[in-house]
Length: 429
Ligand code: HAM
Image 1 (spheres, rainbow, N blue to C red):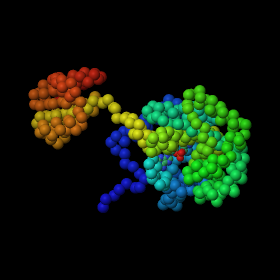
Image 2 (image 1 turned 90 degrees about the horizontal axis):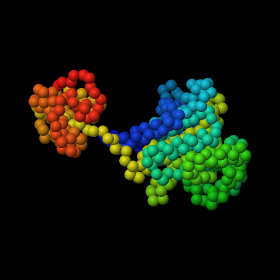
Image 3 (image 1 turned 90 degrees about the vertical axis):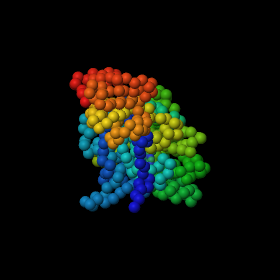
Image 4 (image 1 turned 60 degrees about the vertical axis):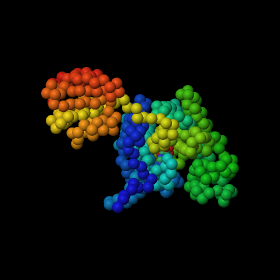
């Protein structure tokens, strides 16, 4: 019976696997330079972790979680996102005790039962960051700055920063009231999702994909008219710092994000290329969430973070022809003449790897034709040929494929040939 991968999952191999690790490496390096350290939390958590914080009005908790009862009768969920899990880790381990600022990054798989389509899978990877313990528009701007630096370092172009504030609870309460009053008479003209959101969290109606062009939606009250002075000042300062970092942004007053935990600023990194079929796709998103610590019975934790969808970043890199497969590593192939030379060849292979060189041998064939075929297949930059004479003299023939230069050298001269560190040991076949 043929078995296929589950719907909404991906196999990554060859170039894609390299691209995936490249993104992880670049983002990790930049996050480290910005003072973040890696955290690794479980792939599954108690379901409550997400229900409490991501929120029951979110699509994630409502319809997308992979939840099951384990053999100990516990409700377990494959993590749909990391923000709640990292906060759970922070509170559970009392990492707040030293009162320092804590900055964490993570990279790994997440699970949401969504309808698969371009850029939307049921298992996907995020690179994300969370910073705790500071509430300052300068930090928020610097985190957005860091995300832009990551995209820049990956070579990704045409990504715009969409930003908004949904205010602190004070602003949000009066805004929610205004939205409820406004939408109530129009409910029958809006989609079913909107009607559900009206009951649970009217702010989320602004995020509706079905009614986004509807004039009712366009004329809805704007958050900026309901912000208390402090929230307005915070947002203005944040924009000022973005200007300082020369980050181009667009204020998007209907951006509210799909998770319930946000307070104040929210932002997304949107692919902006009108000629592309994936124009408008969110590569990542985040915002401030100052109330989550309390959900975990922890202290009041000022917090902000964002996450990129790694698969989506890969998509735009592919679309823009960004090639990460430019590793400049020389490939060496060993060709042997006869049985005795095959054994010597294996010893040489082991020695080349000690020198941290990339080398291959044909383990099976002793005939020359298939061995040279292997050299072609692996795109060898250098071909080493050894036979009985070379073995007797601890020598080897080496050919630079590009320049066609061929020379005979001593085994002990190999490191010099490749311009690498001196080897003290006495190498022989
Ligand atoms: P999110 O907007 O749900 O935020 O996800 C962040 C990014 O993950 C999205 O912009 C998208 O690129 C990617 N993503 C989400 N769902 C899928 C999917 N089904 N298939 C492929 N990619 C997907 C969060 O998860 C928040 N935890 C971000 C955050 C961190 N906020 C504060 N800190």
